Amino acid sequence: YYPYVAASGAYAGSKVLYFVGGGSAATSPVAILPQFSNDISSLVLSFYYKATTGNSYAKLKVGYITNPTDASTFVAIETLEQASAYTHVGPFGFAGAPANAYMAIQYTGGTSNYGAAYVDAIHVEEAPSCMQPGKPAAAQEDITANSAIVTWAAGGSESAWKLQYKAANGEWSNDIAVNAASYTLTNLSPVTTYYVRVKAVCGQEEISEWSSEGNFTTE
Image (cartoon, rainbow, N blue to C red):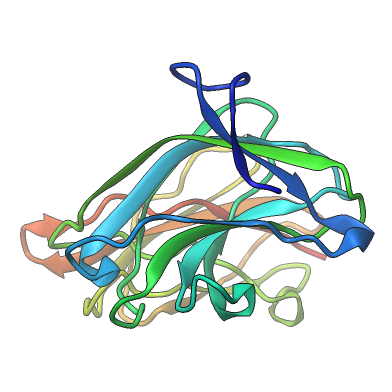
C-alpha cells in the first residue's frame, strides 16, 4: 500500500516516503504524521519533495486529518506544484486545525494512475510568533485581461500584510501595504503569468517570512 518508506530516491540519507496514486483508480494515499505532545496549531511543518510533472498526474496536498482511519476527514491547507527536482517547502502552519488533529500529506488528483511523489527530510518545530500567511490565489472568475483579485489565509491573528507581485521572468514589485486578506492587482498585461507573495505584519518590528508564491494567468 502507498505511501511507504522506499530504499531509493531519497533527498538525503537512504530512505524516503514514496507515493503512487491519483487518476481513474481514485487512489489518494495519505501519509499521517504521529501525534505530538502539542496541538498542531502551535507547530509548523516543512520538507523536501518532488513529484511527476504533467497535467495528467496528481499533486501533493499539505493539510491535517481529524480521523486517521478515515481519509475523507483530510483537510487541505496548500496544494504543491509538481516538481521534477527536490524542492524545499514550508513552513506550513495549522492555526485553524482542531485539537488532536494530525498533520498529513496527500497525493491526489490527475487522470493518470501512475504518478509518483517523494517526500523527505520532514521537519516539525514550534510555530514562530509571526507566522507566514497562506499561498495567495486568484479565482478564475476574478481574473480579467488587465486585473486580478488575489486572496490568502492569515497565518495567525494579524490584520496587515505586505504584498509583492511580478510577471514571469520579471522583478518583484516594491512592497504594497494591505489591510485585508485580499488585494486587486490592476494595470496587468493580457495573457501573462504573474506571481504573488505576501508576508504578515504582526507588529512594528515583527514581520513574517514570505508566503509560498501563488500564480495566475491573465486573459
